[in-house]
Image (cartoon, rainbow, N blue to C red):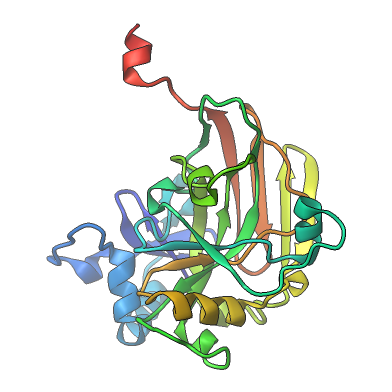
Length: 285
């Protein structure tokens, strides 16, 4: 199942080229930030799934092309990233002989999440900004100290995420947390749609240039290890997202580019790049 948020953070399901609205299942439910209809769906999915499917069977829906898709999980309590989690990317960043000896994670500010219909906005800084495509896990239940063996049992689904990064020295979380630096989408796919998440292709283009072409097989630490490690550090909540690292081939993006990410069985999105608007005070001057 492919679940989306669309047109004012309403829940929907995608079937082929059609969008079936599901927001009426939550009519009258008060939503207090950061809770979305996606959170409600995750919390009660075992009961809701057959209802969603029956409704989709009976409803033609509308053309997906006419719908504005939003980030499918715009307000997680945590946006976690695994860094240096592909062998050749570790060498690319640190040189030959570099080894990542254990899993490690960082936090990006959830406020940098945008959707597939939005743009990456480059801040006015004199530093290169790089693309990093990442298969991303959406957590399905509250958990702590999950074992590697049980890690997949806490996964609600998968999505794609562009981990946009300022390439310089200094705190990773700050360099990755500028507004718009985490385009996410176009949907969350449930695990039954992904035969083996540890064997899916990840590709990224800037314009017509293919820059990254790899597989999740190339990870240094597997998805289950990353989930287990993250849960040993902090409690994970439904809707939390874990970006599992980028393969080699990262490079700069500039205003006017279009970045295309494609993750096999999960999703594809094309995101334009532009300069961030000038701050209001400067614009007035």
